[in-house]
Length: 123
Image: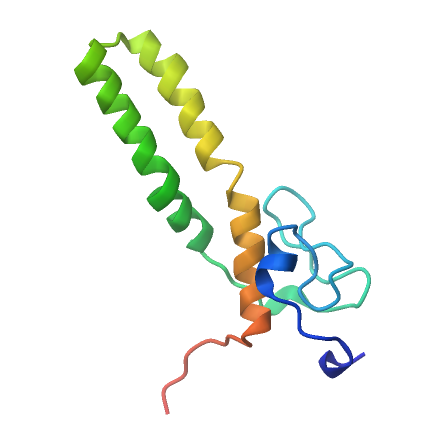
């Protein structure tokens, strides 16, 4: 089926849930962050998708910086030992960095499909 037979779906609706950006029925991922080759429902080829380091960049900006501030605050305010840092800052960092990766990658892939993003070309 052609893309015109599917209504456009906003990227945040499909991508964050990890669904196909065209039909919203199939899955984007075969693993935690591994993209499937194509949608098992509508057959959309996912080779167009290249989110590169986008999800990691957003996670670094919005999750790692608060983790660093938490570690510095613990150190300055309480002179926290190494073990306190490991058992407080470590889990906080993991919980704020790992879970958002998949929804962000799905959103970026769905956005590339929705906006028909292509590689830049010189004329």
